Image 1 (cartoon, helix red, strand yellow):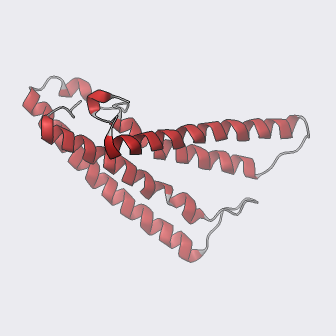
Image 2 (cartoon, rainbow, N blue to C red):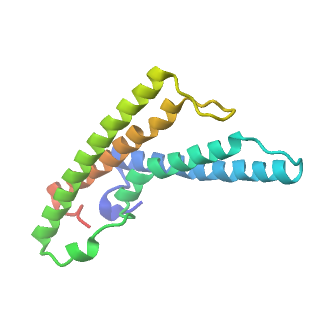
Image 3 (cartoon, helix red, strand yellow):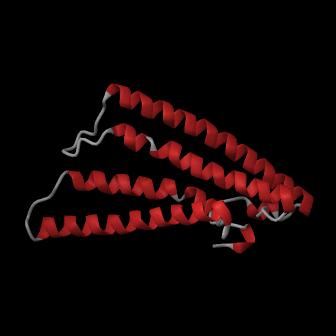
Length: 168
């Protein structure tokens, strides 16, 4: 954890560690599924249509769930070079503005994701493979990830406002 960002303790640190654990578990599961697919294909000369679907869902889950953790740890693409040219007060203002815009984006995307998940649930739409995965479960990855990312934006904004140390 990056103690500089304050992510190592409290509920924010716990949420960050949980997201990182889920992301790491997703990667491990992708490796296991891929190894199983390779064994199935080259040893038994068969393949399951569901393998690609599982790998796609694991990849989506891993990327989306760890997005807030990556933001908290400062491991995202940003305009840090430009912001470093500003005086300290300007950097704090830019950090708060970024977090406000980020929170608005997360709220909008969370709402849209929930609407899509409800639409898919009501229509009973499932994937076209043999797994027949209810697609509303896949659509729920978006609002879940937006809540996690929103918590990261809110945490950094609170730190920036409180002590001026949350800025990049």
